[in-house]
Image (cartoon, rainbow over all chains, first blue to last red; front, side, top):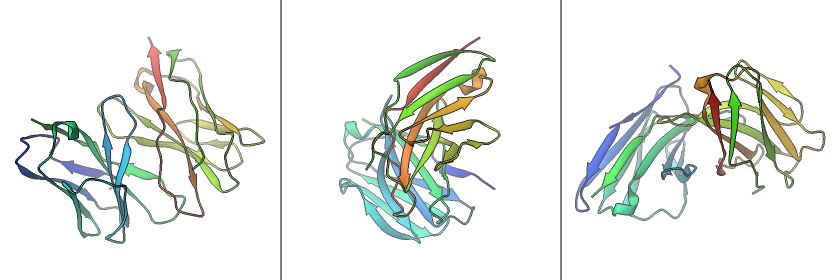
Length: 113
Length: 111
């Protein structure tokens, strides 16, 4: 299984809502990533987890809260988002060797009203 | 982090070869050159990577200049399915840096 799955595919939420994005992989990868991608722009790194521990937070606002409950799962909890947070949120995973490729999921298209 | 520059867009005819260039004049000796592509409405996918020697796989070939300051991704026979944004990314293999995506090249394939 060489797939990264993300749910939901689409999400519409109001600025006062709390929601979560979910990412799952069963490739035994111990590095997992969240990226944000605005329309017609490249992906921007948000968070990196290595061995289920947060290793990088690219100065992301606290309204985005990542969680890695086990080696296969990665969540992104959303609270009090702004309309400018509307974007495609991509999850990726990678084997821990430096030379391994990243596998990306299809993303969750988030719209904040 | 070393930077890459790529043309904003390129066009190719179906079934013809495509050469996508990438300049990386500040590349360091331990930087690997990675190529990813992003098809419409999908996440990026790995294409190929290399360090010094040219590389071939089932998807593409990677030609790396002798001084490593530039590289070229070669699609031998473009298909309509190859229409995507192609990203050239440098990553230091010893320091475990993360991928930093540049703007990439948007490839259009004409039937």
